[in-house]
Image (cartoon, rainbow, N blue to C red; front, side):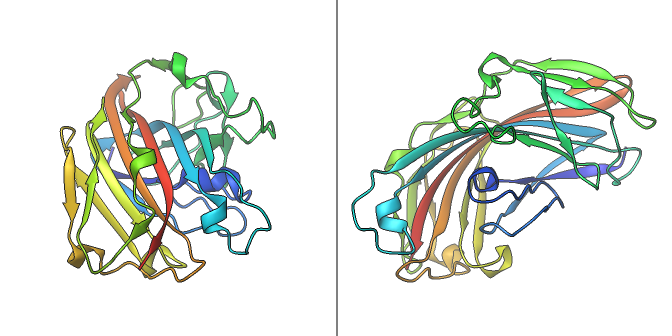
Length: 267
């Protein structure tokens, strides 16, 4: 049990909406999607089982790469996603057999990382819900390195109500002020992603659960890449919470994370 950090993709919404790509800690199956930052979560554990809710606000008229013939109302979408990783006495990800949450089976990638979002079944109408509102009932079938177990993670999701009030434009030369008041969170991350790769422009800040009005300085915004007239960047408010549970003499982290994502332009 030597794992000391967990890396979570925060642009989960892009995985389901804009390509068939699935990305979770070294999982990348298909064509690239807009750049995805990673968040390092401290801890020592034998596996992580994560429930994610993503809320995405996209104004097609303002951010379309081509001029639209008619105005299109803003689109507000929600997506639920489950991810799981298991370790065997080190940092190598191992097979844990069949894994499901709320009877939704997760897909195991070639590196043994598990993933499913609510678009996976191809149901674009009722498929947005993995029943996380009733809890996250995990079932791990088990394999040689992981003993089978079940656990219902019933803790409430963290939440944030300010998505609609987030700015549409970020000026790199000015400080950025945001209200990130959240509920049921252990911490709140603010992420701004721009550029064609994560390295070309991203800012990630972590705040305590009681943070309200915060300011990100122009110096911290300097790495961001200017989007230009049709470029798109992303601003995310990400409250999350977790708990450590001992099962079969091993420690597992159960997390609930909510990502509130809005398209922005960087000037």
